[in-house]
Length: 175
Image 1 (cartoon, rainbow, N blue to C red):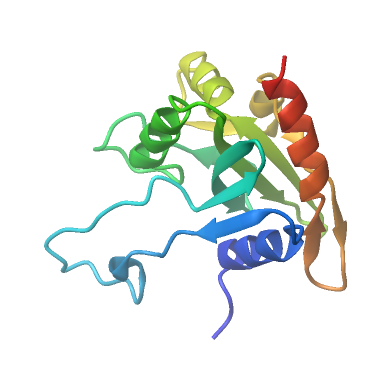
Image 2: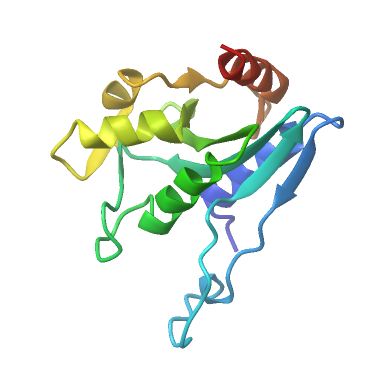
C-alpha cells in the first residue's frame, strides 16, 4: 500500500528533529484508520505534535498539499483541509506562557520540489480574517509573516532545518 504523502511529510519532519529537542506525536483517532465513519463519537486532536526546546513548547499542525491552495473551516459545519477544531486548539495553546502554536504548510510542486512554511496561529487568524474566500495560496500566505523552513532533498525524502526554525521562533518570542 502506498504511503499517504501527508504521513510521509510527518515522518520526514520527525526524522529532522535534533536529538536535544523533545518530540511528541499525538495518536491518530480510530476513525481515521480505514475510513471508519460509524463511530458514535471521537475526540479531535488539537494539533499533530509538540516540540520542546527550552524555554519554549511548540504545538504544530502539519499540512502537506499537492495543490496550489489550502482550504480551511471557519465553522464546525464547513469542510476543509484545516479543521475548525485544529484552529481552535492552536488558539487555546498560545494562552500559556512560553507556548508557540502554528502551522507547518508544505506545498509540493509538480517538479518534485517543495516549499515549507511555519505560520504562527495569530498570523493565520489575521490572514483568514482578511479574505472572503475559504482557501489560501502561497501568495496569500506570504503576506502574513510565514517563516520559510529550509530543507534539503535526499533521494526521495526531505530533511528540514528544525534547529534553524526554532532559533528564529525563539528570537521572535523574545522581542
